[in-house]
Image (cartoon, rainbow over all chains, first blue to last red; front, side, top):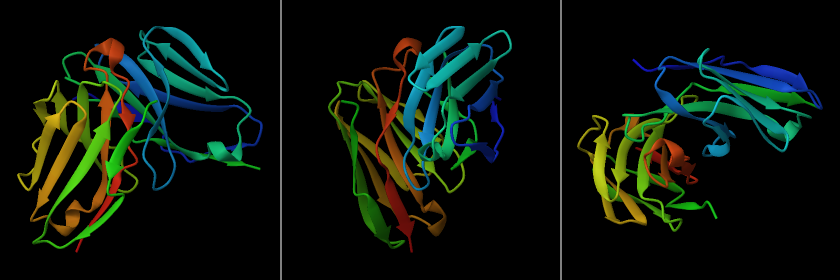
Length: 112
Length: 115
């Protein structure tokens, strides 16, 4: 059973702080890793993807991947109230024929 | 442009009705997906079309019937649904289904209510 685990939260951070979201996955064959942001009642929006070990930065967002530890994280610098949403970690594994395995999501709340 | 367009945005239907959800993308993506999402749950995969052929059907009841008329369009035909089928139905697309091009982009979803 392929699994993707996230802390459901809520994770509460003050405005301007760094928010750190974590995700672990069970299948060592996993190859592609994605972070989606989902506002209440809206559809998931892709904000970051990472394929290789290390860090990938895009604006205020940094994705980190450690395949040996089967761990992927998302850092949000200078958090804003507009970042308040549920963040879904998704993993793609070869052989899954396009089936993204989603974690249950972490709810982030950024307090002004 | 990473736009996936879904219509309608909202749909209320009775249990004896037949309706269709539509999805369109013009990004040249060759993989298209239907997901179902219940409140406070992650999206659950229903169907995958790869190069216009159905490649995955995740044991979805036959009252849901997908169709891929061409590489840009994906439909989901609904018939004799149950109230528990009420959910947000999401369409997504990606360039393909290989690791290096699997970024999936979602449409805005159709909020379906079955009465």
